[in-house]
Length: 542
Ligand code: C2O
Image 1 (cartoon, protein in one colour):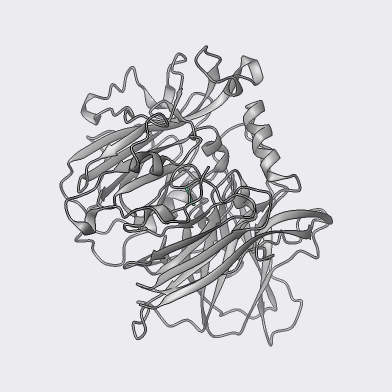
Image 2 (spheres, helix red, strand yellow):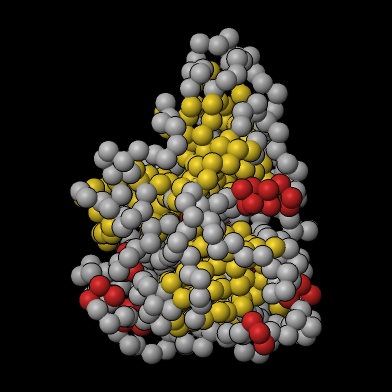
């Protein structure tokens, strides 16, 4: 492959949305940020220079970073942030990867405005496994706040209450006409009739999952999370933050304008959110201008069945001979939210909030505390003190569903705070069964794993039960972010063949801030091609 060079300047930029003007953090003054283009097996080199006062890192979401963990980007996991005035050059190869990816800031809640597409085409001469589209367009779903997002995160974690809802959902940075004073903030795509278009959907939003639909048009899913899928035709899709999806759309209608709508999917009870859809227009050139379709039909905000239907439709294009049929390590991981009572060992900032308790989010009842230094560096240089290697594992066969009761965790189940890593030996065939739990409410969690894609071999509602669980080892989708169904479970498989320290977390930022994550440490193998290289010379220091 060839090498693609990019220059990213982290800059503040004054923007106006919803008749409100403020400074946001951007790359090169663009919102959404610049697209990065490459072909399969190309090397991508991006020099990131921070011209703002905000600590920054960039994560290349979905890139498996084979033997290049140093360039993965999550702050305090694989690197210290790039401080004001400093720069860091990310270098990695799209090894056997092509499709729709994105990049985003991975520090505080800066992803709110710091994101862009990463589009990787097949090698020259290799066609798509579907009809050649007339044109391609990228639509990035996001959320917009008038408030400063760094403050927003601090307020939310300090109060322990639910996060302030976004002022608007956005499509390519634009809220569309449904909000107060937003008539000038509308995105559109021009199309001609009688063609097939490829739309690359990317969910970069912070705290909400969303449905997406286009009035009067079907969507045929052909790719999800950077892997081809069996074509699946539907009239709406759902994406959680961190998910990408490519859909084909045929322009077989006759009006001038059709609305493309993005509305909330929120299955949890008692959460405040904008129950308004963001609209962009799909405009037919040559048709009678300004003849507008009826609104796109979106499911109601808590339609779990609509979500399941999309999930059921996601199958790998080819039957996956690589799905691990045997597993060496199986771990049952509860994920969920609970209201934390104050406890003496809890750091003070996690001990404030409503009713003398705060919201906590955890995996196996450990609320992940971000360290103050790079975990990868600490692990590599064998510096003690920033983490322990004792993430609690509960082999499934011993999990006590009666006392552990995932869906109704007893009141005394409190999350412990800690930075506890799960260590996996190189080459281990792993199965993780993630079970949604919650003492306050359950909800769909988009769980993202860095450094890997994984086969989603099963999922279901309620508590996982080996006797009734159905596993698909034939054509499961190969993803990097899986929406664990509300109050349900999902099982994923992968081979731990990429050494490094890899973050696994809920891609809803509020849950990440509350501790819904952990890190996997994958050890070195025997050969040179199984060993993490040395750190780059310009690696930022904390
Ligand atoms: Cu898209 Cu850890 O992130």
